[in-house]
Length: 126
Image (cartoon, rainbow, N blue to C red; front, side, top):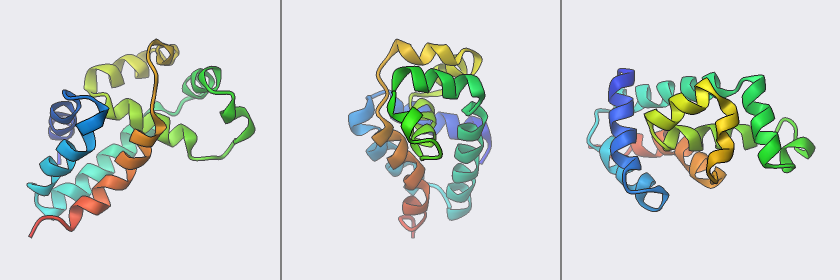
């Protein structure tokens, strides 16, 4: 799956907000062949990793003092995945300026669920 297709799926699902994002994305992924779902997971992992710069970690720490006490936790992964779940425009904004994280609340549960979604979706297509 090309990155453009990845963003098309995410952006389409993100239009309705967090409440239905995962449902819409799961639905979109269920229409993809298993290889494309696997590729989705690879693109997702790369995008989450690209966000995790020192500046991003600092911005998350400013938002959430929990991170200071939980070094090594998955919290940064979940926040980075929540940024991805917000769509390509917000992802690019945060990638360019991680301090922009403070402009909205982030639900790390959305990120956690997004990271778990591709393997769950792989088995949904006949």
